[in-house]
Image 1 (cartoon, rainbow, N blue to C red):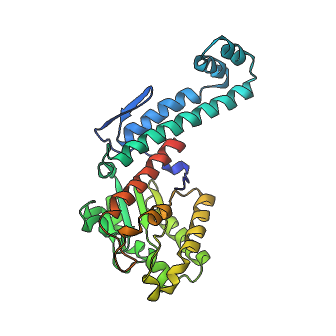
Image 2 (cartoon, helix red, strand yellow):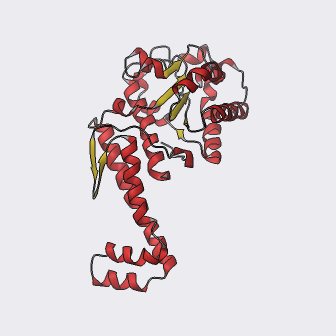
Image 3 (cartoon, one colour):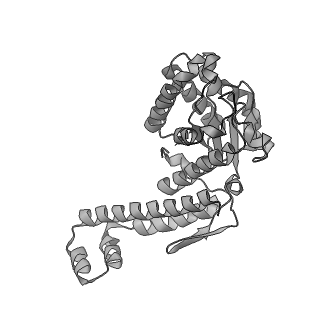
Length: 287
């Protein structure tokens, strides 16, 4: 899964009561406590350069390492601290994800201050009873142009997180005949949301591919991988969080309905896990 993050990912959200522990760092599972713990960690790692050698000594395990730390130039110490920080963050991410994927943490308990917009495939989140209908704006046959129809509701809801999960109709109907055309429309949509919900972080989800026999009625759906490549590149360039579930779809073709487009109920916990995992990664790596 891609990890594309930006400064707007930093956001204080409501707490979840579940308690987590990552090595010496302990915090509750809610996004607000999670961000506070990450900031505490960064307060150590982002200490002034004059304190870097002291922290390097603290990390040392024996006399030779301490002697080496004393002889390191400030730039070298800073580079070492960055490497330490990256390793710590990666370890925290891996442990948290293991708890999430194992079910030790309930993925649905982490969907708090959010809104989700999409098409008939998105509606499965509410149809199967996973998410609250008042937070999922999903319309059969919808494309990303439908966002503006829900703008008033979104402003009233004022979510911290917005998931955009469109694509199957966007490609199939032909409003945007090239991936570049579609990227321009996504850019316009992000600008609209930024204007009316400036404090929200928008996550763009990759388009779920279609399978046979769907191509008989929608041959353009064969081009979905090209559209995903263009959207991913756009998100990377503009710092927009992008949730890539392409591999997930490839690994769970058994969770498609017979039409090759819609999804069975068992797919949604997997999809939801990838969405919320990207939110946590975004907080972790950009706090």
